Image 1 (cartoon, rainbow, N blue to C red):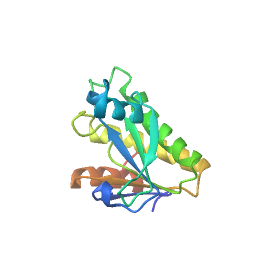
Image 2: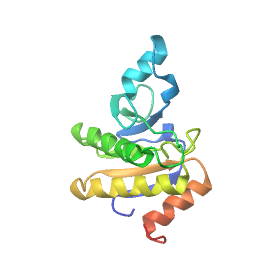
Image 3: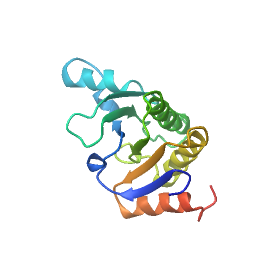
Amino acid sequence: MADGMHAVRADITTLEVDAVVNAANSSLLGGGGVDGAIHRAAGPAGEARITGGDRLPARHVIHTVGPVWRGGDEGEAELLASCYRSALALAADHELETVAFPAISCGIYGYPIREAAHIAVRECRAFLKTHPSMEVTFALFGEEELAVYGELLTGDEAG
């Protein structure tokens, strides 16, 4: 584990950690019912909220809405960085020790994996310098994502 972080290819919903991060869908922002509940739980892009884990192995779920990739010139990097900072701050506020992140914004939101991974690793590394007892797991869907995070975490690529 490099700097309290590691990457695994896993279904995030199966991990036994204090909290998993849910990359909430901003297209579900509004109205009442389920859409409204998701919006109230997740907040605007770049922010995070925490709820109980219900039937998941994780005790908590931290919800955050990542940015949609629009080419990189519309503040996407800062919004994505804010997702990680906000989620980690919530975890620390709730005295959580283990947090698992997906590759926020890299699915249907189209954020390029390499750029997103740089931001994720940079923000988590910076946070863990002041919270060394916390452990971060990056739970990734595919081999490409795992390879990119692995390079960044082991220092095989200049970051």
